[in-house]
Image 1 (cartoon, rainbow, N blue to C red):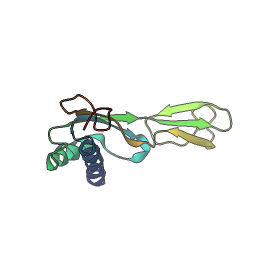
Image 2: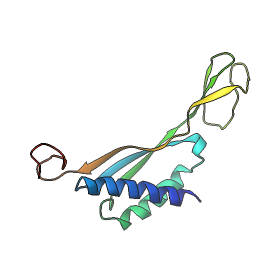
Image 3: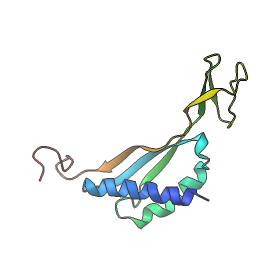
Image 4: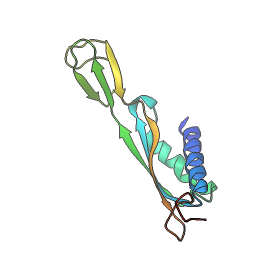
Length: 127
């Protein structure tokens, strides 16, 4: 279950960024590509537990955005979008394809609480 170690990294990154801003994470969206071979439900479960270990992420809502596998055929130029891990063009069946999406594992966005000034620490006029 590699979801646990990935969840640990996500929570650490989110907590460190929130701490840098002097803030707390309200919510975060994580993009997970099909090729990463992660079960989104397992990742969410792990995130739900691990978020409580850090003050900056306690109570944060994590959401998973799944990214389909997208292949571009070098033979015919067809773009194949699939949820299955199949490395063949849907149009001509060639195996000469390039992955153009589906291998992502990233924090897309985070919503954080900001200080009383409503401004991040590096904003003009903030102390």
